[in-house]
Length: 389
Image (cartoon, rainbow, N blue to C red):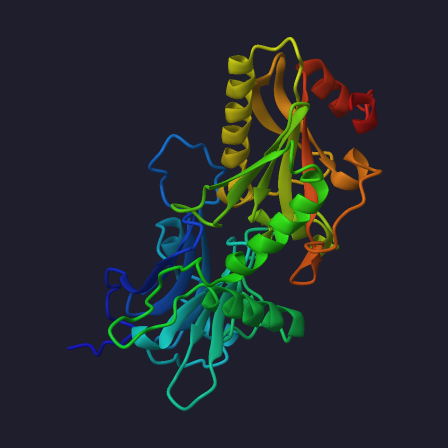
């Protein structure tokens, strides 16, 4: 009888060692083996609602061989959808390594939710990062980093000696740990998320103080309302409304607690753009029917609430100059232009209570509803943001 690690042993059906969904619910992390090799996957689950999401697909990174590897990659297996062993000359341990134990493995999600690291923690030893699938996985033939990989290959690259990457993983680990409730004598913390004693609980009052400073300048004539919209999704968020006879201002409260994904793929300074809050100002006209006006305010609130998790749900980001769908709030306008507060309200003295979070600036982006012709003008360069508002 062949031993479990024999090269002649047939491939077994994959066995899952670890499965975990991201806090945003948009990706699943899976670690599995087939008695020959171990792989780490990030997989986009099939949407259970009508929401259309871009194709993240499945991204795979080899972790280790459990037996001596072949001389070359088995391309026939790859064509059959079988994850191949890494050639022995590309491995640090040519003879393979033992199968890791599930209880010693855990996932650290990047704060943006579009990347993750596989960590092994052995008793009385320092934790080791076995593999990383970063946000730039899938670009130019790159899939991920593996601690056991010695030479760049189509399956993985060696784990880089990169202090910034290590620090990013450590920061992400601390960030997510801060969301977990402290265990009591009769309850374990598990993987649940607790926003009552969390980064959001710390940031929310600062943001509200910031908005109060800017928009609650006349409390006797301005009504402030706050709505929680984050009970069933992540990141947790709220909506605040300031209404007076002349206008209503609506803003998100909490988007900036999480950095937006994909910014680093478009900018060398992602920290300048990745944390945002969204806001819109609706001017009231005296001849507008109050019932129609209230419906407009409620619809704008719903639209803003829908955008609160858009970047993480769509693996993208929103920044100054971008446009987004914002239908039926303002007549003839189905989209909105995003304008930074320093441009939208250049003479507004800003509060300093929530200018930064985790060393990044918090950008207030204002939605300016635009017509189809205005959007086309922006795309062709015939119009600029200042031409519109």
